[in-house]
Length: 82
Image (cartoon, rainbow, N blue to C red; front, side, top):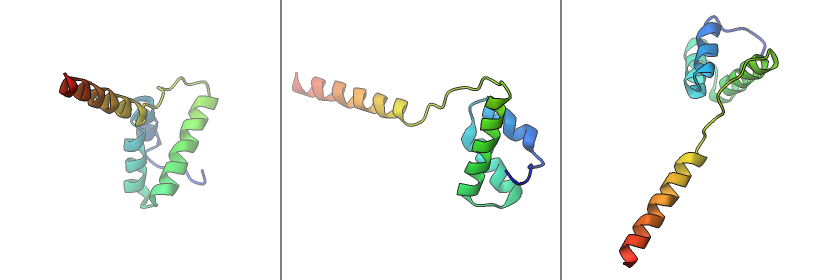
């Protein structure tokens, strides 16, 4: 990361809370940089936090949502067949 954002503490706190998207949004609003650049910088901040020994929450991602949708559709299909 070439430059530390002035809201670095806020961004780190958002990462600690598992709100990586909010951290990216905060960085973009503050700096006016593009989405990819903000994501790359937040990833670099997160990597530094991990390298410094912080334990951060695992990313949930879309997999959990997709599993819930698949389970719901399966249940609906089973119900319709009965």
